Image 1 (cartoon, rainbow, N blue to C red):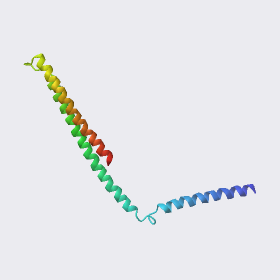
Image 2: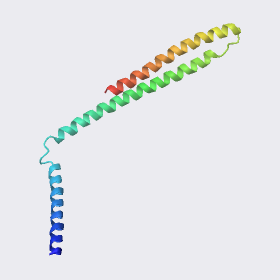
Image 3: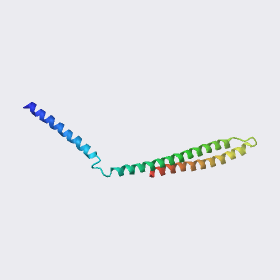
Image 4: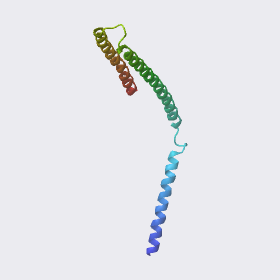
Length: 122
């Protein structure tokens, strides 16, 4: 009797597993999913928009990096002393240049913050 009970339990478990597998396959079949093609199309369209948005943001970041590089090079050139300048003139020019450079860098930073905020809203 023990052997017969064990076999009955094992065969019923195998049968339940097969029913579960076939139910999952039937649920996933195209016969029951009429609208699945529309979902794929919507996701494809969204993927294109996301790709365009990412490409646009990457271009803006490249422009930002280039603008920052150019400003830093210009600032470095302007901070050097010129041959005809007195020490006092040079220090005055450096102070003006530091103020100008700080304003420019804040503006550049504001652009990148705008890019980040714009990309997080989408």
